[in-house]
Length: 267
Image (tube, rainbow, N blue to C red; front, side, top):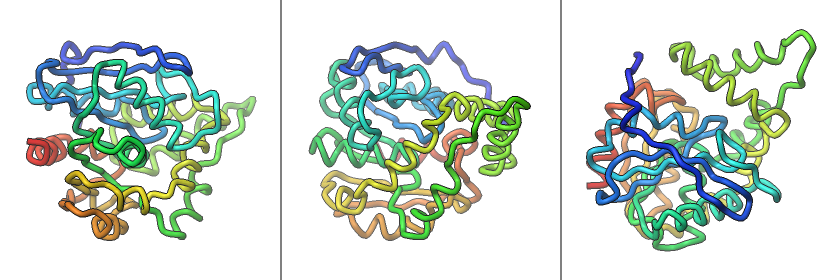
């Protein structure tokens, strides 16, 4: 399904941090409850534009590009989920956000949990789409799915990235697949770094430390669906939801269902 987005509802800005600038998208009135959204990789905050438009009348939404993605400057240290969370926390404080609702999808779910682990109480509630509690099989598989394609004179690396993106969801719109392909290409040799950071994160320990309410959900076609119950078993106050037929791009292709879940959970 193709969505027409009212881009006038979404604003953009930059925040100065110790690594440079963090780019973010913003929607909603600042008097509304603050909701921070962390994107998956190799996406950017552009993946949340559909959701932001739907939720802008209920929340003040901040969706940053993680360091090295979209319009944000890259880390000047080793890439870890902790390093991502530290810089994003610094950026959010600079915006005057000291406590908020938090939503993360896939890698964004890694960042969301790391943020609350390192800064307890920063999140009043956390929603996780595809929690990244990886078993050994997934940890072994991920590097095979996330290596960088060397740049070739004949441009074959462009087609390889396109095929990788389309394989995630063959029914996604061509515009969505093109956006994700170009984002992946832009990462160059750094493409695998965020995936390795997810593998290295001690997600189980961090998730078990979370005290605030947690909503964990996944689509029936999400490769992380099998870890959903194990993730929920680690939290003190958890809710579960499953979206029929949803895949990697659930936040866009199933935006109505996701926005309803978030509205009901965050109310």
